[in-house]
Length: 361
Image (cartoon, rainbow, N blue to C red; front, side, top):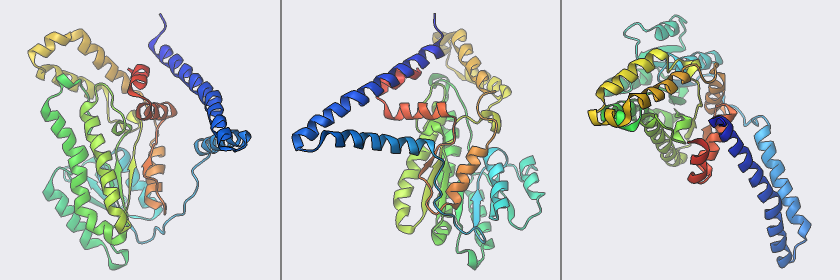
């Protein structure tokens, strides 16, 4: 029997060929008939289709077109989740570009390695702050700290990068409501809390709000419902905020990283083992009996296989964050991800669910 990846690939190729044939022959014929009825030359329709297709290919294949850059000197950015991963790398990168960086670290007061490394830079433009985005008190204290260290020439805070987040996994019936609450408290409510507190400073500078969501903020996946729920919320909040901030000249962008598990270390075999044990222990007896240990172990083995997957370098994310911070006309959404994940996201968000479900589940 053919392997599942082979079947999925064959289905995707077959659908692509069918779509190409339909669009290549059926659509021009239909448009030519309409053009003929309207008295236009038939060839003009085909030429228009070729022109549109050519522009699409250029859009997909060509590098990003420069859209101008802002003056970095004198501008400050606030970043959450700087202990490790994207936040830590971005703090160092933007500091290197010349920004004043307020780096929020969860474990600063506990002597965390990430915050220590940033402090050891001994730069006046790198200011490390203790920050738990779930704590109203710590957020307010951080905002007060930032406010007192922005001089008049900076005219407010140029950008906030909401990066702090947590990840988890588990089937819906194995996941407690407390887990849903904890994940959303960090990924969504913490992001909103920080944004609301800093918006007056951002509006003053006509700056930027940049929220790190995920490809799972655009499409769901099995075993990831708590994470997906929180990231879908980030996407919705960002859209609403973008509409409201337009009148103030504030740009709102969303970063939607793909699989960077290896690069960030957000999921390890130890984390999978600990989480798996917790999920099974806390599951109701009826759920344990209905699903069975074999089914549960199969899915946990799948999660373990993800620990060594994904891109090994966070540079694509850094490049997109940098563009969102420095471009005069930043994009609404950035998709730093491998091509096969980008294709899957487009399929999941644009094709009828009956087709995308058949392809991927």
